[in-house]
Length: 390
Image (tube, rainbow, N blue to C red; front, top):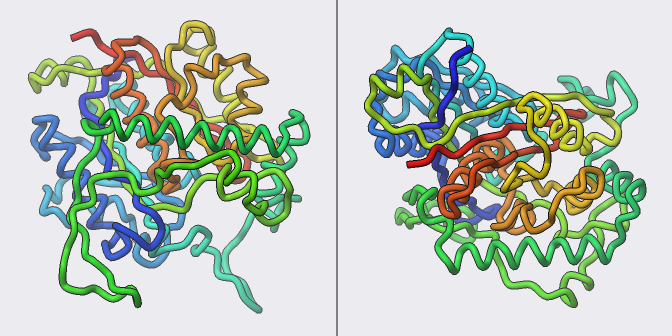
């Protein structure tokens, strides 16, 4: 099997719903980050063998193989093929796994993986038509299913996670993210994007603005978080301990060892192992637990070997349950905040977490990072990367 290297990883800022990116079409945002990743890597566009992108709500502006549309929107070579996949919240992490697998198997030499979700313009779940005669299928059409809110509440009950625990975790996420912004930790991974300005009626004003900083980060207090009302269907989580509705895109470029040498571009990290697992679709958010165990086993590593964990903060209970079950050191987990503070543009978050993990490994000169996510319908993603010493 060929070794797989990460050559470049970058992302847009994460925009709040209805804010910085709301006037930008999904193809334009993803295409801009694809182009920027190529420019940063020094790899010619025609050197990409395939592009694989993740997107959850593939309807309207996010339909019709959005990854391909985004690539062509930038005038990039039409000979380069592209595919869009859906593994729910883990879509772009699974896209990265698929690209890495192609390289490892010798099918391709250089693959771009990516992800996009513009939740301001295409709300989550838009690809299921509701109404008197609904079209399309849902998990509950085939088996007993719960909402993600209910799943998060069931996990909290199982692991004895209290409202106070969730509030404290939400505060920690905000504090870590605020520190990261103040210290410029995200500066190297962010791509500034020009976006149309909208008026109070969400109509373009004809002006543009540069979106270059994550918009969800805010100062919080435990008292303020404790005063928030719970989200529907439970008593544990609030808007302060749940992931934000957001817009964003992220890109990872991978290559084989031979291709990296031919390109003359220094690899930045090695993909050690990847996985996708299935779990109970009712308590669907427990996926990071078995995904972590499986990817560690594949890599021949233990929790103690990992220097940095990025576990998606869909809800506070997801990460807290994962920590309890696996005995993770909280000091290594989401050190720059997570989706509670930064936001969760679902289709792009997996690639975003890989991007952030890579840059944090480089900043701190550490070796291994593990990235894991829970996904709708009972899935879990896992990836381990190893920084390459310069």
